[in-house]
Length: 272
Figure (cartoon, rainbow, N blue to C red):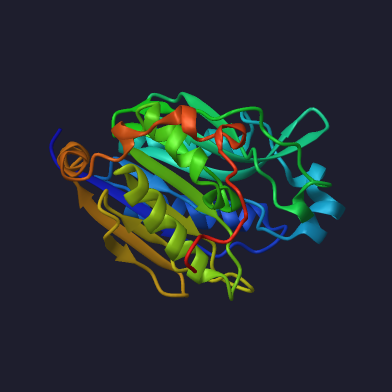
């Protein structure tokens, strides 16, 4: 595959202003997505991330996957020939999900519902039931959402399933941006894959989105303000890095279970 442009749209989202947020998102897509194979947006970019607002208006503001927002994004994705990873508040019947909708240029929409909810999200959202990968014209992508950064097993599972680009919409607050940087680089280097982590900015959120290569090197990093990151990547770098650092292929999965750990004696070592 030749060089592929990937974009992270680090946007602010006004809580509850779905119309305004979506208008600004569509403007950003039209301005910055042409020529890109993949565009990633922040978590809950359509409604904003505000749990009090979600308590009060979540079912009013959330949309199904065939609702007007996803439909509008799909139209732009088709026009531009790009895949868009859209963070949205999804409603399925009376149930709310924190979702990343992967919108392909042919109009296909594949949802990933956040599986590992942060404690204060548990009363608000239902957890998704499993991980997904999606084959796109930009390569095989695998999504995680925000807090799921914290679980190395998730990224490794996606990498073992063939993910080439890990995409992570997030809403990391100010004061925790160090975790965004640390975990994004670690998940890339752990698995020798590209990672695009796109974070909310604006009131209370840290921005600092970044795109990382399979060696864990930062290719582009945003500041705290609204920003657009665009990087040209070559997916063949994954195989090259795995030849240099073969850890993923040398896993001994049978050892990675608590009941496989041998507990040794606690007596002092002789001579010490």
